[in-house]
Image (tube, rainbow, N blue to C red):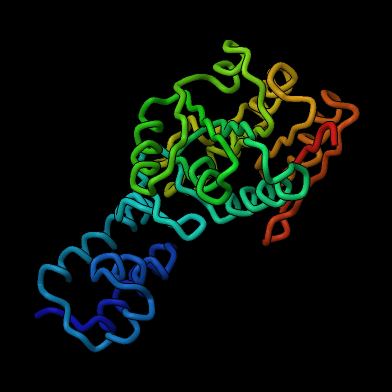
Length: 287
């Protein structure tokens, strides 16, 4: 006999708790199955699930307990209020990265005139969350985005199509495509792989066993990609430019130092996220 919504939620909550998984996973999975939001779910707690819905729900919960992230099970995650398709070829967009995007948009508004078209490069496309959001939020931006993995570009292109935005997707390695074309940029933004190898080995299986390692690991100390950026940024930045990086907790000072050594006259600051962790480093050059 099938359960009521509230019975299914209670079952999932205790099952997830026993397995040290997020108890909210049950709510998210049921909202997806019932094609509703949290408010709709709570208003229908005493509705009966169909046998098919209950079977699918139990299967989802069991798969999540095995370690598969919820977002890969349901196939999407929300970022900046928009639905982004995700699969195991891309990193799941995080709320902290929304703060990076917000920081970039605020600096563009403060430092550039509203009339000029700005050349923006997002390095490490993933799902396209950063590049697509920037293009949708500010019409003066011409956004290009680079990824070394063709599989990631396919996911991001699908998201751009679904969200009706024009972004240029480039298969390449860091800033090399712009260097080779001699193209200059007003803004470079990146959430590169920054987890140190040893720390990666100790990550939760939900992350380590399912999200792409190439999008997570940044060498022994996690700073390999930032060092590479220091070689390439001077070759592509315009006289006036913004650089915005997401960084791992504890890396803000190191990445700030790298930027200051490369661009001694620029203003560089570390910004803490909503959880009080050093999460973003911004550079303003030539203003």
